[in-house]
View 1 (cartoon, rainbow, N blue to C red):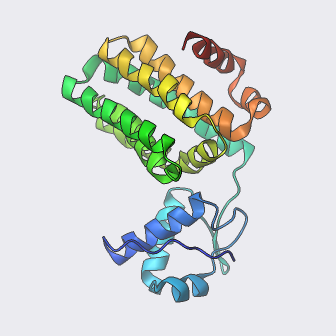
View 2: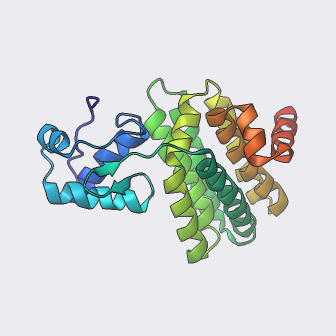
View 3: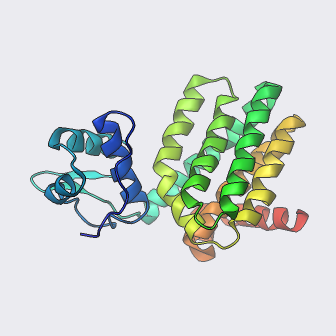
Length: 242
């Protein structure tokens, strides 16, 4: 069992604090894929009660970050090819539609908020130890697009898919040295397209952003097998335009 250095945040309920600690450990590889959480060690090391620990694990199970194995405990599942493909396809379908709706319905002040998240993500990406802040800002950027649809069902669905995709986002960001350039060349055009009410360009920008993230996480060979050559070619074309 690896040593988890992150302390439990001091705010929120005991369950919330345990949830954030465990989620951080899973997403950052402190609890490796293919391993069981050691309940006794975590309780002892971090002073978590058994009930908050189990409630937090159940929440992470609902987010598909943990699996429950009867009589053995909570298991950190490995990312399967099928699971990655399913997440990728759903993000492209769902967030592409969200971008089009947001372009039609967003208020000017909402677009200003979106641009603020873009700037936060760019600033965090340029920081030496800004990975956590970058991931938070990047997720907030995509969720803001969903909010701008003014459709609660779309917002709820995007929130869920973003939660389940966080580990992939972390792998993509930690495995790339070009994150600041990616942020500038991929997120900024989305903001511009929404401001200009260009729904097609907004959708294409979101798909290109998702494509680059998965390319960073998986590599080109797996990417083209998973998502198809069309998206890979579109990403290359956008690179040439920047």
